[in-house]
Length: 157
Image (cartoon, rainbow, N blue to C red; front, top):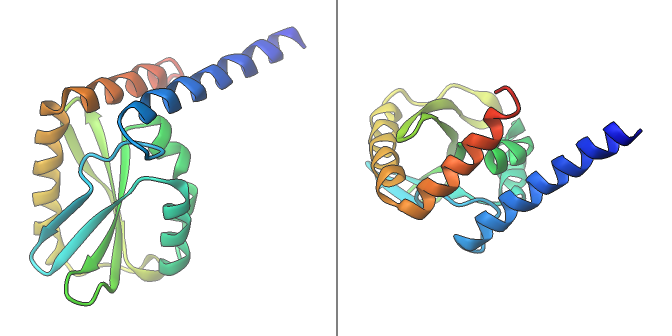
């Protein structure tokens, strides 16, 4: 019983410390790498709160609404991909940092987990290049990403 209570206490402290550090960087539940990126006909908007993930999941008919803890406690960031002119959602994009300053595409899905336009890949590549640069140059953001990386390393991830 004491062991279980101790583990739960440690988990609570982890959640609280990550939330406190994220709050220092702004009002979001987790700090974005960048808030908005436009390339070609697309606008990619960072989703920085669980409520935004849930809304995106409902609108796009897929499971991104369950990604809150990944975005909070891991170096995973999600974007809503929309047409610039109409605002129509065309995809949901998840990127993850595999090592400091090295973001890769985790997944990209259209409505109902459908495949996306292959031409979107060049715009995703442009987003990844910017994310790599920003996550190295923004020292506050880098410190936060390093914090969550160190905490998840303690989980055996």
